[in-house]
Length: 210
Image (cartoon, rainbow, N blue to C red; front, side, top):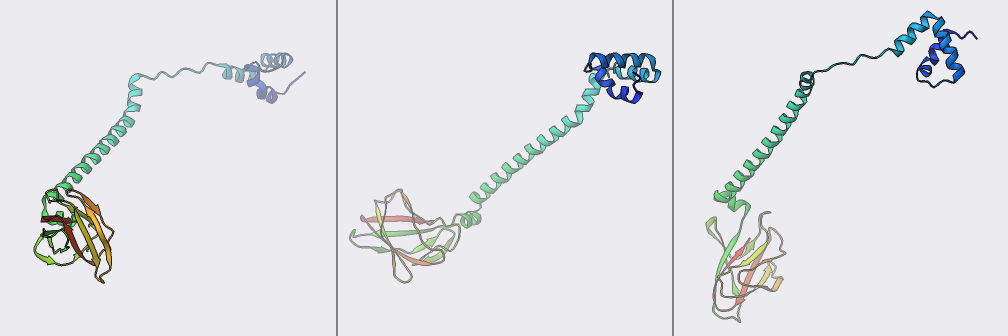
């Protein structure tokens, strides 16, 4: 059977991989032996592909650019972390050491009171550590940085009871108890004035409002 060259060339890969039937393989083999053009193609298809010898130096040169990129990225990350730490430390130092910044980010009032009779409430007046001229009979949280916390100083004689009223004389807290050395959170509105009264054991008291 005379098989056209184009068909032989189409099935030649199957023949080379021994995937043809025995009869087909025989026909292909005979055709290749008799047809010079198909024999050339068969020879080209079955020729060994020469191995490309790549030296270690060539491999190293190919890897070097990627290695340099990785090292550069690592250096950038380390520098970013280092600069972030430096900026944070400088910021913390500035806030702690520069009084203007400290008072801005950590505002507070303080009050002194002398209690002579534990059965009576004493009105508080408020001062600011950053403004020695400031005196007020009302508590005003006028900054978003206020935490609205009241601290009964640890050296005070004992527990204090707080009565807090708004500017319309509505009682917000009638018996807020804070032990010496303790801090309590209070739910007050910003930019609203409050009067504060305290009662407790006789003695001199120091209170922080932050």
